[in-house]
Length: 93
Image 1 (cartoon, rainbow, N blue to C red):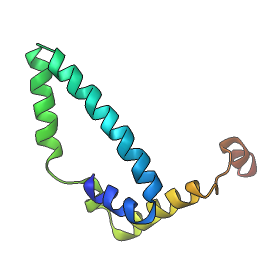
Image 2: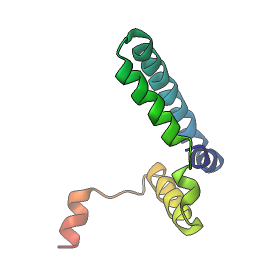
Image 3: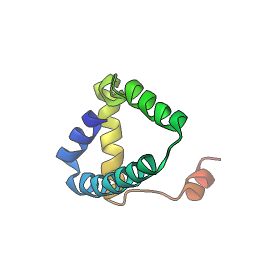
Image 4: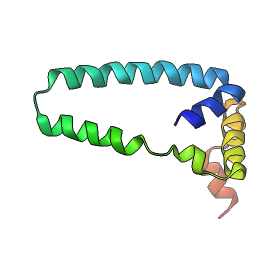
């Protein structure tokens, strides 16, 4: 996920800043849960998740065209260029 966050930080610093704050809160909550548990199966599962996620960042596997489309979509949302789903569906039915 580092590749995606790095790409987003260039184009959307506010998005990344808010996302980073949410991530830090999530990390603290997860740390608290881990420290409070004595369930070895939970701890093993967490270790397995880290081992699996240490492989490849999905963002880095996407073709550049798809990355550009995703970044454009995020930019459009941040600029308020969105349409209500129901309105969209009415136009295209």
